Image 1: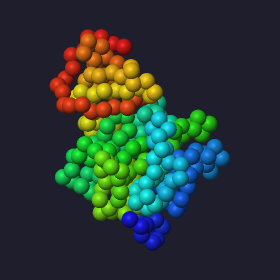
Image 2: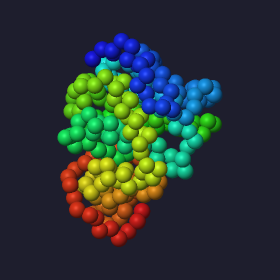
Image 3: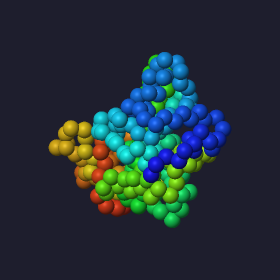
Length: 251
């Protein structure tokens, strides 16, 4: 889907957001991080591109989409909250709410730690990077609007990426101060049997029941021996639905 001429410059953004659109860049995350270090970016600044030459996902995986097809955006959040994962959760929740407005009959939700799901297929992903000097986090989001790789989901091109971004920013502003309960409600990983694969070491993968998320954003998985493992990072594979775990240990 080609970009609609002029739509990025139209006054469709909610109050308080500063949105900059570029046709092409290396990485919107990298650009905003550099701007923060230079003192030229601030809280609620948004950078969106039609195309990223060096787009990256989690674990440094390459991520690329056709020009103008999808929403490729990064957002500055400052200052960093006590629990840094909260800002990623907020962007994920806002994305889910925006998609639900566009597709009210679809099954939308989050997969820990940072994927947006549509009918159990990946619709988008989030990558957050922190600037310690600027006390800020840059949250990058790639959302499949008009195109998706094989096996993933898209919105079918019913809306332009700019319109989807406007909805997302509206939903971000509508989130409550305390999102912990809402995040758990939207987290489709909870209650499922999962396999957690750690970066570069699948021999140590853990299989068990995703029983919760702690106040630091770590996923709690109870294995077959009843030991609860806490994960800050990891690739999650949803295996099947499961009932509540009965763990008696902690690790």
